[in-house]
Length: 166
Image (cartoon, rainbow, N blue to C red; front, side, top):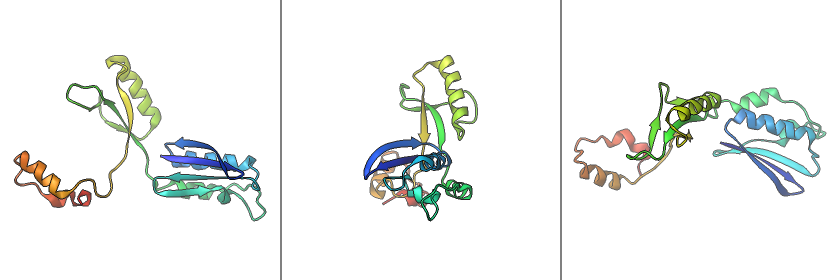
């Protein structure tokens, strides 16, 4: 997820959220076309930090300049959102729902189309979720060992999940 933040005279004017880094940077570019560089500023952030700011689209005289190569470079390798359809009210707990493969979608239009079809057939309780990969520690190794002992898992290989353990 990305956020475009616009500022006027040092005060946040607006924050707009995006699911696509290229769209967020294009929106920044469009904003810079009409902003007053003396009083306005704007930037795009994601969970890893700054992606781009207004200066990426201004020349040395603070006039707008298109920067298509920068848009392409900034938006690649930022990861695409993955969407899944889920049933949050299933009697066994949250369940991923799918009428057919694939279970996940990278195109939000495809995800919405599938959601509409599935809601028509199964009900409007189905929801669309954005999936994010987990990186870094998630749980304490001792707690996982206790949990696995309660399940009688004696041959659990902790090295397979070590990047998620503290």
